[in-house]
Every structure is written in structure tokens, then in C-alpha cells.
Image (cartoon, rainbow, N blue to C red; front, side):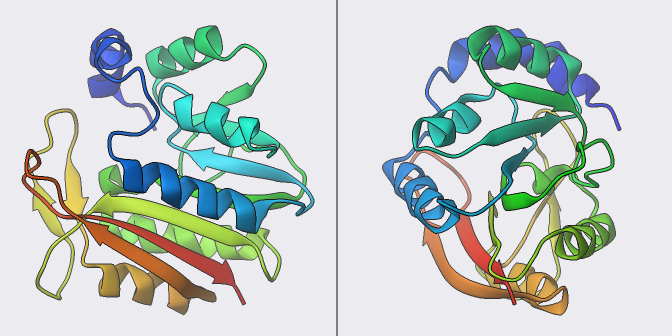
Length: 201
């Protein structure tokens, strides 16, 4: 998988988003995720790591992090900005992830660009590669009304919004039980957003 849209806009993203989080609640969610992942053997995998800012924040919280992203240009920025971390060309399938135990998985606003049936397949792959107790945190643009994922006009690449109940069902079907969720809104953004933490049962 490649991401030509993100390749073309990588420089602009690096300029517009120097901070790993746009809203305080996102920083709190990442901190709570890091607490659950702390001390688990293996690496924390940041799926769709983009500029690497969140990977660096989690590393600063004591996690051993590896970032995956299908955009070569975004990875170039991540490697320049965070030279002490490892970043790999890859996507939600984890096909290019080096062998070894996985301590935790994070996917912040990256699975929105994966066709919903492929999200189901990816989550099942994650479940097969992790052990009981492994936390998984996903963040995504949400919808208010229950139902299937809805496509929306993302500026960079095709994208889908999920109702938290529907995403929780996909996770549960793969053996990942919801631990908590946060749904939040900002007056300057058109959609609700969600953070959902699940743990491999």
C-alpha cells in the first residue's frame, strides 16, 4: 500500500502539526494507553505513525515503539525528527513488521483510510499476533447514529467514519474486549471523534 496523498502533503503536515496532539483529551488518552502498555514485553506498534510525533511521545513515556506508515515522505519526516526511533514502511496488515513480541498497538486516525472490510481483516490479524492482556487503542472520526461506517470527504485520501459501537463490535469479534472509550467534539471540527481502548482477551 502507498499513500500518494500524504506523500504530496507531508511537508505541509510537518508545518501545520508540530505537536503530537490537537486536543488535550488525546494526550490524556495516549497517557492512559501508555500506562496499560507499560512493562509488557515487546514493542508498541504505532500503525500509521505519520510524522512520528506520537511514537516519540510514547517513547518518552517509557515504551519501546516502532512506527509503521505507507507514506515514504511522512516516514522521511519521522526519521529526521526522531532519529532515535525505528520507522518502517508498512500498513495495518503488519506484513512488514519485524518479528518479535508486540506489547501494544496504537492506530490514531489511520484506520479511517482503510476500507471497512479490510479493517476487519487487519484487526483479526492483530489479534492473532498478540497475547492476552495486550492493549489496542484506536482513534477515528465518528458518527452519532449507530450503523455501518460512512465514507466522508477527507482532504487527503478516501476515508470512513465509524460509530464507536460498530468499531467495538469489530474488535470484540476478533477477541478484543473494550476497556474504555472517549467521544469528544471541538467547535472548530465538523465531526465527533472517538478514542477506544480494547484488550486482547
